[in-house]
Image 1 (cartoon, rainbow, N blue to C red):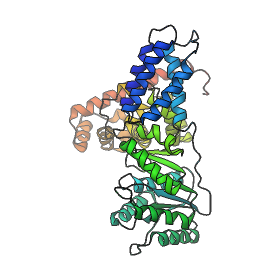
Image 2 (cartoon, helix red, strand yellow):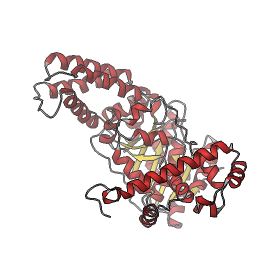
Image 3 (cartoon, helix red, strand yellow):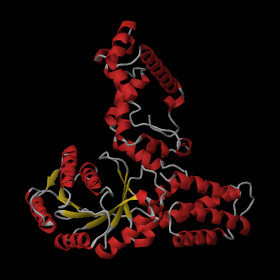
Image 4 (cartoon, helix red, strand yellow):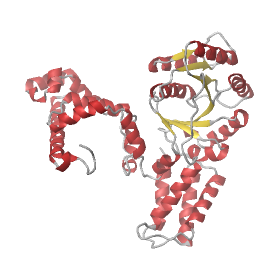
Length: 440
């Protein structure tokens, strides 16, 4: 995500490398390169120019204190302006009401139906809500089937009327059903088209008028860049939506939509989505996105994802086992499962400062753990809990059970033993391998 933009901005800041202070000449050169980087990222020229004019104005006359280099100062100015361009702060999401009604709009292929499922899952698992999803795409039969499958995956109710060709009455009937069955959020997935037409716009506007939603979210494919921004403006003129959702951020996106859309329609980005898994939906934080674009990582989001999978009681048990050097294969398997639940591996690693750039050309498959899991799952429960039981004949059986070569099993077990030794060494360090100030 945004790899090309990040590289070009980093290159722009090199104009200031080794400079003792910021002056008109190096500001001009840096700002020129920043503007070109933004335009290459499919940001509208007017927006790019206004952005860089603000950067230039803030940088001109700035004094560089001893502890900060000119490059660092310019990076901070650009970070602040990027944050402001994308909305400044987290936008509030209104899901109060009895029931709360959320209307989803956008072009066909933007990821509306998948986002509807993800939002329902988010509200159910993260906010404790009882959502119902509504299939109001009356033109594409597969849309009803897709939403039904997604709803089954996440365990939420789906409302549809396959023979009804009136989207307004379907939405109204769904709200009545939600009230009758104590569902406190109704998410309405509307029809899309390959391009904007009057029939589609009139229909979604009529649904809006009939159900009076608390939130109207415009879903946009971030890979379409400036075209997405233009489409958003047309939708906003008709619907006056409350927020934007950027999908497909795991694709080869240049970043134009994320950087331009708030400026163009003056509506906040509320969620970002990547991949097809139902748990790959994140609240949009402009400051964190600015940090990621500038290669600073996003440790806050990484920690939040880890905490979402964190069980304090289980963590205490695991800590005791590590202290006693009793960490086993079942513990390792459990930790792998927790990591996988946090999301796409490459995205997670990209949140670590400095790592995103290092792995930009590395293909990190989400199935990277499958081989390890297969080896562990081919062990008996006794072998998992007591690795010392595994002798050559058991290794041969494990290799046969997981379809691996005996050498691969031996290599994994050697790596596991080295990891245990490292844990043991950390446990023997002062404060048990902890940082000062952490509770024991």
